Amino acid sequence: MLQTKLFTKTRREAPADEPSKNATLLIRAGYVYKEMAGSYAYLPLGLMVLEKIKSIVREEMNAVGGQEILMTTLQRKELWEQTDRWRDDMVDIWFKSELKAGGEVGFGWSHEEPIAEMMKGYINSYKDLPIYVYQFQTKLRNELRAKSGIMRGREFLMNDMYSFCLGEEDHTSFYNATIEAYKRVYKRLGLGDDTFVTFASGGAFTQFSHEFQTICEAGEDQIYINREKNIAINEEVYNPETLAKLEVAADDLTLVKTAEVGNIFNFGRQKASDLGLRFKDEAGQDVAVWMGSYGIGVSRVMGVLVEKFSDEKGIVWPHTVAPFLVHLVGLNLEDSAVRDYVYGIYQNLKAKGVEVLFDDRDVRAGEKFADSDLLGLPYRVIVSKKTKEEGKFEVVTRLDGSVRYLSEEELYADFDRDPNT
Ligand code: ATP
Ligand code: MG
Image 1 (cartoon, rainbow, N blue to C red):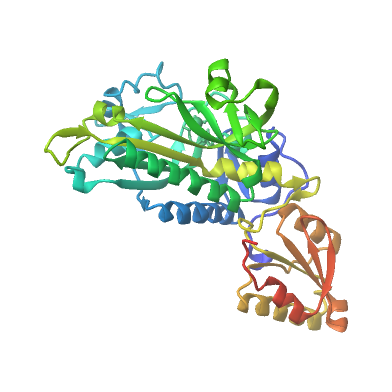
Image 2: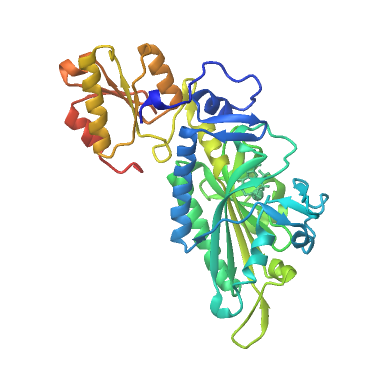
């Protein structure tokens, strides 16, 4: 992509009304636009990052057998009344409205109730199970505080998956497979080492749920961890009973600040029972479906990546989610021979399948480098009059600032590899 064609511009100054580091950097670099606190628009480069995160999640959800759907944002009051979750004293983040034609509707903050209701149309017999479905959906939540940038939105993108099983055995095996799938997602996002499967409060049906918590200074949670034993406990369930159950001593745990990047729940048969989602088993008996729900905060994850992978100069995207692998920075473009040469390199890189953003703007070299650092693509390739004469490309790795000088062939060989590594 040509940078001159990008309508977004970088900004030197931080936006005055934005307290978070992630949104400040994302706004300055032109990845997102702030509509209001807790609501951010995704601009071309930001949408590319979001889509890359979604692709990783989608691949892993498909790999465990998930089928993708898209539920509605408008939801029926009657449905949520059946589980007593319509009341504002039960769920304190509802956005609600009234239809002009009469009647109240809610804006989806979760889809557990509507999907159970929908599945009544498709689940009749044990032969129909198991079913796993997932979606990427903008959830709406009337959060009281929205000061963490895209890490806490009043609208935000979630990947939510739901499992419908015959019984506990099937459920447990899928639940465990999903834990592994989630781990693969966070590993591919570059968060594997700092993300912990964490014991957290379970809700109505089980003692615990499992959260995926990533160490992050800007996170709003605190958990106790032991890296060697791979144990993590949310402070909200940190008590003698939990410690005894997990066979770990308080002295062996360290308190860290984290962001919740995922959460999975076992509902048992309760949720389906409340909503009348039943099937006929092999003996012809009516049984409530065993349900589970699984959520990844897709847009929150993007914020966490910026919080963790950035420095005083800007963002440092992991390869797997960077909008482009290479930032081709052309210098001396006022010289038409150099300009033609750099365009040729750009075309060659694209022909080799390298994702490349070409800074073809007529601005000073210093400004180009500062913008390049802010944007945070993994590699910067500087091409100038000197390159044309000497045949050596300066390649700067954004992560550590290291500089290499490569020939054209070496350059193509360097980028001709799996971007996951
Ligand atoms: P939190 O405790 O942070 O408010 P939650 O437990 O209410 O989150 P869940 O209902 O478990 O959230 O939603 C699944 C995932 O969606 C969370 O693990 C988190 O990653 C993400 N998420 C939840 N609320 C928000 C939000 N307001 N903005 C961005 N992501 C969110
Ligand atoms: Mg949660």
